[in-house]
Structures are given as structure tokens and as C-alpha cells.
Length: 201
Image (cartoon, rainbow, N blue to C red; front, side, top):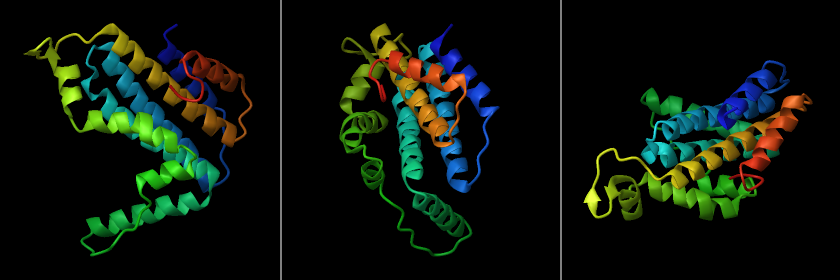
């Protein structure tokens, strides 16, 4: 069975049998859901041979994963998220408010993922901003501008591994946090390991 279908099935089975007891647990589960939804979109694009947008979507997935980890480590992050939402609502209603939300690098640091910030996340950011290496990788064949060419299979395989790795890591972290004990957790851990690099791809 396709790895992504297995991940989706296991998430559905696990989430059908979990309960949460407070806002912190609810937010962790919501963030895990966002990560997997974004990963699902990315995986679909890979399957269709259209990976140019994958790093952009995966950047958002990784940011949500970091929010998940911050929320898991500290109930105070729930208030940080609530405050950010309140500032957004005030701005949308025309109020002149100043938001002092936590910067993304601070979230990575709080989550204990500083190396991830300066490594994989930095790579995804460069891809999101359309730098020269992105233009060459995604929009040329040889020295010629190409419209919609088929990407190289090793790149698609790498993306799929990263997608599965991030999704399963988010699910494992969330399910462990709510003390889920079903067989799906062990199966997700096995897929996580198979994605190639352990904690995240």
C-alpha cells in the first residue's frame, strides 16, 4: 500500500478513537491535522508531477509542526496563539493595534529545533522566495526555460520522504501527548522510521 494512504488511514483510525480534555490538547491535535492536510496537498502535487509549490506548502507545514511542539512543551503557547488571533481580529475590524507575536525563530528555539531552523527550514524559505536555484531547478531543462516539464524522479522521492516524515512526526507527537495507546501509534512510528531519517525527514 502507498505510504501516504497508510498514513491517512492510520490518522483517521486514531483520531476516531481519541479524546482531548483541555485547550492545549485540542490545539496540539488541530495543529497535527493542519500539518497532515498540508502534507496531503504536497503529496498529491508530487504524484501529479507538479512539485514546484511543494516547498512552499511544506514551509507552512513545518511552521505548524513547530507551533505543535511549542504548544506541547508549554501551555503558555496556547495563550500566545489566542493573543495572536485576537490581534488579527482587531486589525480586521479596523482597530489600530500593535501585535508583539513571537517571531518564527523564537518558536524554533522554544521547540528545541534551532538546527532545523537554520537547515531544512532555511532551504524551504529560499524555495518559497523564488531564488535562482529554485528557478533553475523548477523551471528550466538544461539552459532552456521549460513550461511544465516532468521533474526528476529522485527529487520527487526526496519530497515524498520529507512529506511522510513531517506528517508522521506530527501525528506521533500529538498522539503521545494525548496519551493515545492504540496500535496505530506504533504503526505510524514504523512509517516514520522508514521515511529515512528518524525524527523528521
